[in-house]
Length: 113
Length: 115
Image 1 (cartoon, one colour):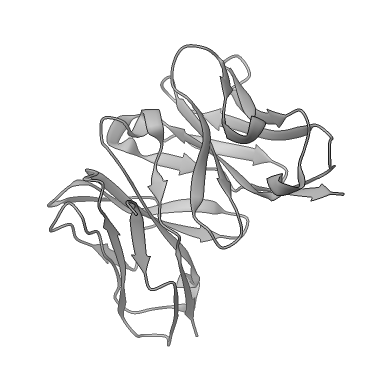
Image 2: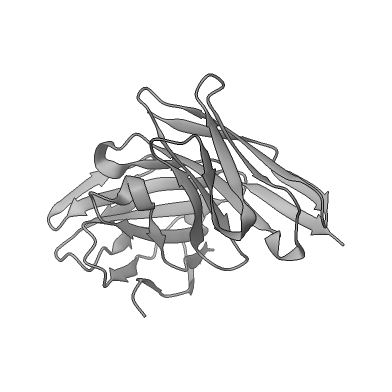
């Protein structure tokens, strides 16, 4: 079955600094890849997704991610962190069959003023 | 507002009690699923359904039952609650044909504590 590994359970950056959240996946077929964001006491919201086509995908709130097949990675980046970006971020992978989506353990992003 | 509605938001159970977590969506989504979220483990799939009358097990189905009698509703039943079932439970839904394009719509969660 497909799986996801998120490197780093906690990431702390200063406001205005680069945000880099790492995600590596395992899949037996070309994957569909997602990043979700979870704010405190809320459900998950879709941030961006990769299905087919362009390997650099842009999402909401200035985030983007690049699909690198050779590295089996889908890292999430944002050039300049904002205080409102503080949240937990989940990478997820689906192989499309039965819509079974598997999530990583999550990375909690803290933004320091 | 359209979306996924979960009730209750909070629940405390005693070991051995049973209860049903409710999930309803009004988007006519074929696919519905239940996840549990635990610290350091992300979201793990409990059960899912691809349509009324069809359910299947996910990664961690033991101790939970589901049924799907209508497109709108997908309740999760805990038959005999155990402390290991203390968690935050999320319901998610999507169109079958579009889930891999649009991801899932999540409910706001049910925080369950078993004492």
